[in-house]
Length: 113
Image (cartoon, rainbow, N blue to C red; front, side):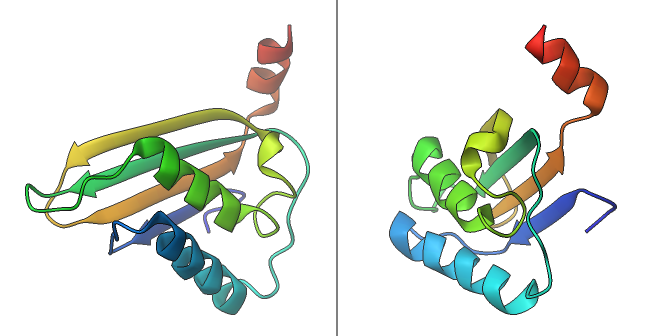
């Protein structure tokens, strides 16, 4: 945690999105017991790092697994996510990096206008 921003790095990937969702969800249940979800608009960035030998992942499936795992921990419902960036890049090892933060007030108001 850095202020209101959550930075998460998962040093693993699995081709089974359902299993990935369970792993992230279990992490939040054990490590963020006192975290309370907040209301308001959020922005989430998900970077999927892969190597040439990594299993192929659909970015939408990874995003859904991550957002489902963050629901109830970071925000109350994934419908609060108003900006979502998901990107697949070459990396040193298979991993997923996640940044979730409340949208800055002026950006949220600008987006609504």
